[in-house]
Length: 261
Image (cartoon, rainbow, N blue to C red):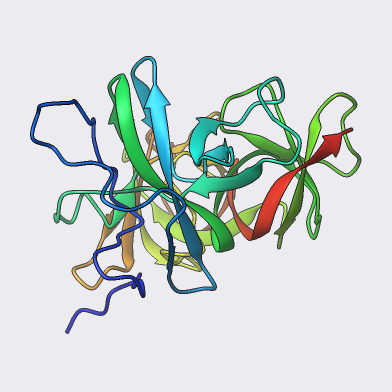
């Protein structure tokens, strides 16, 4: 028996489906819901239905930060574009084909056009971050689109995102490495909801510098089976401690842009 890892209380709503591109006359209906519609899921999650207009091909990664205006028009968050008072949330990922290599959710590359996406504003979620201080309850914008920062003290000129908290400055888990292979197996301390997540930078014995997580494989029941790295391991080991940074689990509490630091 397979247990769903995410269930919503609104009929037909799926926070991991990206609708579009919506082209007039194409026969593709959109939007499927009224803008601003909410749906709910596990781990105190709440998503908002928003409109996203892209001017060029863009890859959306789980954990990317967005803001949206009072008409629910969403844009990738940067310091320059952040508007004080606007709501903020993260992209939780897009449904992938139902294969072991595809996994439940992951990044999606979208051509220029109009889309409708669900953005998470409450609960525990992946978060694309540069620097994190554990237990911090205030984050800030950066110049990188979709990335936040959570240092020990605010950076002058950034804009404050609140309330957000991070349980730890990084995530750690153990794995088996094989010299010459980019695949980590024998995993312990990982979970679909808590991470690690695609795009995270990883380090550990036998893992080359600047390596990131490029893929995650899942069992038919939806648990993490293996992790694929962007570079092959240079040593074999069992129970190797791996540290992941850059895309971490955050707790969102209806965050918004509060002020300029």
